[in-house]
Length: 207
Image (cartoon, rainbow, N blue to C red; front, side, top):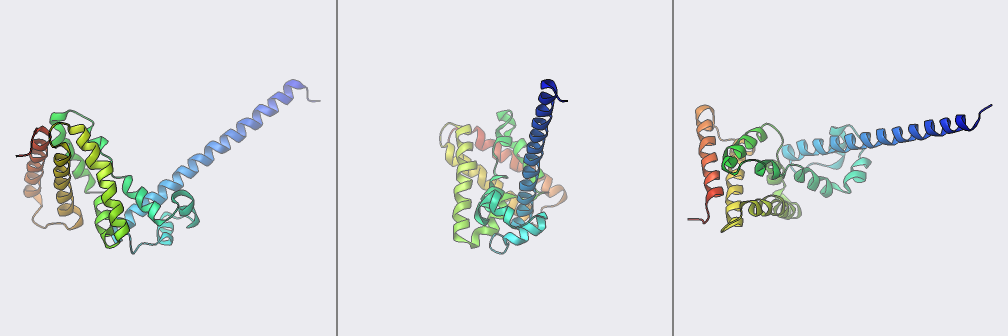
């Protein structure tokens, strides 16, 4: 015969099982979403927004295509999330101001080895809506917060110029690699880039 204590124990056990199941479900959902996002980043960077379909992304991620709509709403929503995941300015500004140039170049060097927002965005320029989205995201997530961090005179212009240097470097190293940028040449280029970026950080006014 089960008394009050036994009934209480059964209730606690049942509640624990439900909580664990929900927790596991949440982890599985997060992993699935991450798998879709990474697959999309690889394909968008390699083949471009206009040529990559939802089913192709789903196949790359090993999931059912209906899950893309569940987690991202649409192909455009997936593309937005894929680009936003890379457009993070915090790692650049998180550290001493006088080491920004060197820190930025180190992060760009790391970025050469993985699918990048730049590759996705440049391949997406064939689609007017995707192009407009990329431009808006770049301004909102890079130029504007970087300008706020820089402060001083012409902060937004300085932020845009830093972004130009980043874009140019990544294009020459990843999107359309320049054969001349190898060995000692690329090392010297990185040193120059760090100095050029730091000069914009330190400048009160554009000369």
